[in-house]
Image 1 (cartoon, rainbow, N blue to C red):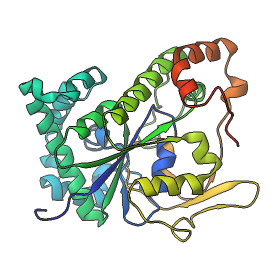
Image 2: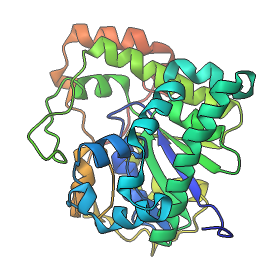
Image 3: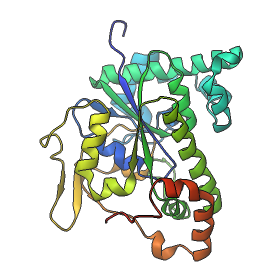
Length: 321
């Protein structure tokens, strides 16, 4: 792949259950864009666990990922998954963000980071070659991984910072959701509202810092995306360096009462169950938390996340449905 321009990487960051999968799926319908799910978990969930790709095939039987891993490493069996996991644990953690701001200060850390990023950049390059797309969308979400990418020389990185009301996120994490990608029945983890609230604050606060130190970042509220998908998606596309018009956005529509999008197959390595959805899917606000969440839980989450809730406008205006 020498001599080929490196793809632009659009990274979708934010707290889990904030709408990253919807954002990614909509972006993936635009020309020149390849969406690949949560790349940070591809080794573990794809190669090791053998979960299903977004196309429905077991990861190791997916033709797209077969070609990508062949182009990047010579095949999936040539990937040293244990080494990748070791490197991730050594550099890609929330507590290492201060180190990621100045990795050269710790030479051993810098070497581990460079090795970790060489694996990921080979993967991005191969995705671009196999897909023929100049933009690769990674919805790994974690702020620490975004900081790792920021430290990678020669990588054109743009970050979509997706935010959602912390109380909606906290309630979502209490619900039992089956993992459709797993080859054996299992469920996504659940979290107590207070724990989710702290994580929401950490992740969003770190992504705010990433923007402040100069990484091109666009903040998007999930509620605004659902309320006005065409307008919000056009804004995201422009930030991502994509020229789109009404024709390219024609897969999003409304019948006056509801909004929807026509989605094709996506080769996503990991993510929310929505990554398997194809055809016409509804776009609507999920605000069950307003009636189902207890007053005590709501008060706890509001208190923990208050500064950013105010900063994002959730206490001064209510998004339209």
